[in-house]
Length: 111
Image (cartoon, rainbow, N blue to C red; front, top):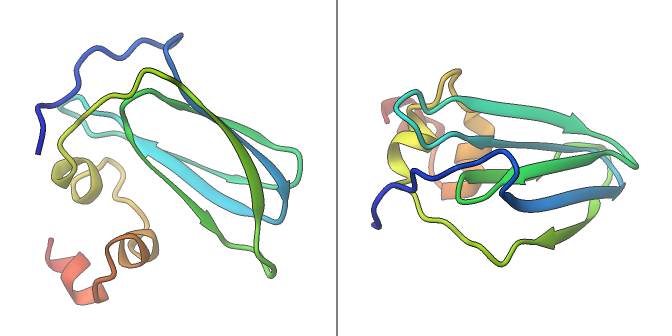
């Protein structure tokens, strides 16, 4: 694991996601001591901006598969992942963690 990324600025774009069809649950976790979770449910035409260097996720949650386009930044960042994923405030949706890490719900609850 790399060192925690500390230099996050609002104008420093990580990437933009545009939902073309379907519904997506998206979010990111800050890398400061608070590990704050920010989430949003997106529908057709919605746009979401992910700050550079933060743990993030996208999950199709509609009745059909979602389609989205992304534009990536050329300035990647690195943070430690354990606290950001399993210690966020508020806690991340267990279904996201189960799918992302391919673990049982009991493992997510334990962590």
